[in-house]
Image 1 (cartoon, rainbow, N blue to C red):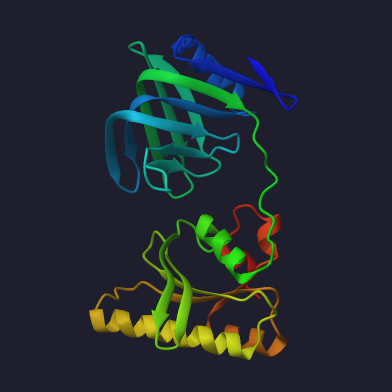
Image 2: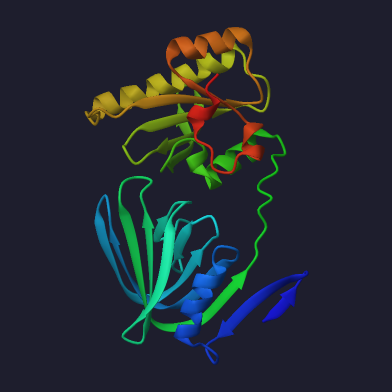
Length: 263
């Protein structure tokens, strides 16, 4: 155990790894500390679909809020994950560490991680201060790009600065249900012009889907993110069925959904 910045950090390397001790530390510390385990493991997922990740060296991160992330050596997004509120337990089976993480947020889902070899295990307290929005449009776009679930649960970025005959769409997202979110960002109080611009973008994406005959019940939703909105613009965005989120809300809410901020 070592100390850093006044906080205790538990570190076990490959020379001091004892899987029974790791299992015990996981149970005793993971509601307070973030657990980071690096090792050779295989992963089984059952839920809305099913998948198997064969044996490979990966990083497993479990946070006190119940979040689980499994990362490989490429891509920004995790290979497997479970949302905040999940329950993870560990056990030793056949001389191997097994971690099972269950979530009921989107229906019953379970991720099972079986370690054949552990290279390192760390428990430490991480900051929970969140993001500080600096206020430029680029900054706000970066925040959404890094945290697409701010817009909708399960959302992922499928387009950024997408060219159209009427300008560039800041972001396009798709959620788990296949719904498309066309996002326009303003770092100022939005007026009628911002709604009209968003409307042109939405109609352009709708026309693309019609031509490709891809529409099958999924919605295309216009989303305006801005630092405030005028009364007339608010009335217009409601009339068109689009959504508005105040960018200032990002600072106080770590995992908000867009619908909490409909004006």
